[in-house]
Image (cartoon, rainbow, N blue to C red; front, side, top):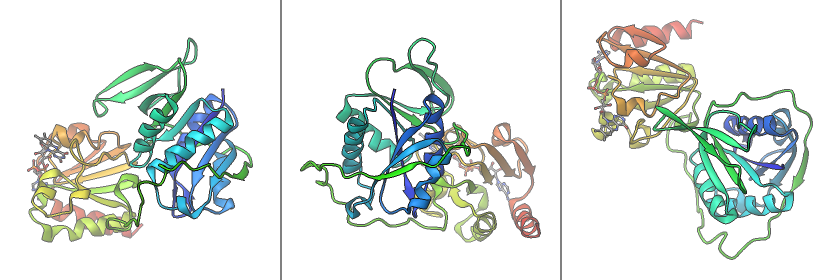
Length: 316
Ligand code: FAD
């Protein structure tokens, strides 16, 4: 079996979630091939080797610098063909998900997203998926034909003991349709840290009373190098921008640390954050449902607790 891993580049470096995808793939088969698009130095691409890639195909043509889903899917399908790869592994992300969907149509491949465990290959190829926003799991049989596997964030441990991969330039033959949709520009939403990829998220709810009180959330986030987020009512009331809203109807996040301030912990909010590795809840009501999902809880007034917490962290 030959495996191709689609790796995402952000600001010239391989994203952590893509290193997880390479590590996942190299546990199935040693020496996998990775494919990357856009600007990245050879030194940065070689990091893929540590995670288990023996070869990196680099699509370095300027046309691929802006994430173009159609063009990426087409190029990955061509790379899979030239590499004889019937299994594609990628990270579930705002880019990986639409690429995977188009790729599955192009390759005629089955697709399993939000995979959380190594495949069971004892009798075919069965993967475990997280479903219903993390409330249940499904085992999916991908034994037949080509397959695409989307890895849920934090589901695989990044390997660091791999070798030095070869880096090859890959120039896919373009189809007329590949660049039908033209990405003219991309803008960073706001903040220094992008919410979907943040390792730490500081999130505020209606308990903060109004937009004028968000300074302490931003200060704590800045101190921790975190992204800011909010509950749905907060964005509905325009206290915060809509792209910060997390939950069932907002962005799903899975950071290493999620700090919830003045958020009750409604099931719809939890649906977007319950994959976080560690949840800290700050709420003045000890009966708030969020405490049941928390790893650590502070019962107290956010207006007293958050500034003290920020000062304590700054003092470390
Ligand atoms: P509240 O429920 O009002 O909770 C405020 C909390 O702040 C309380 O627990 C209170 O004790 C605490 N508090 C108050 N003052 C302080 C203080 N000084 N210090 C500390 N704590 C304090 N919600 C989402 O977030 N995301 C979603 O994606 C989402 N999707 C939804 C989809 C549907 C179909 C529906 C019906 C609802 C959805 N909701 C979603 C709304 C959800 O049900 C809750 O209403 C919402 O999450 C509550 O937001 P909140 O916790 O900020 O506010």
